[in-house]
Image 1: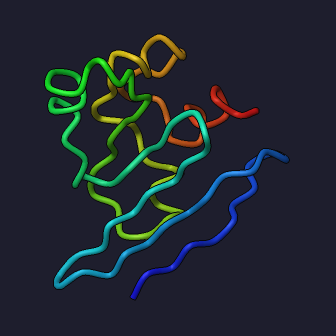
Image 2: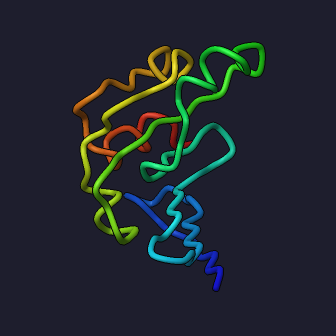
Length: 101
């Protein structure tokens, strides 16, 4: 099952996506600037092989729900996300507010 829902964080719109997979869930919170995902995100691929795309993204691991993803500390961020003020260890919610429009 796939669920796509609007998510408002401090009056800023985002999209929350949950894909139920065998034995796991794929979780994403995004807007038009960037996104944060669960552990399925390959940040090294984005930084290295897809660097020319300048993708603003980060990964948080050990989460099973969108609420857990929001509260989780980022464990890896892309170089472009660093340019937006994202840092490893900050909460996903804090990072998302830095790209809120």
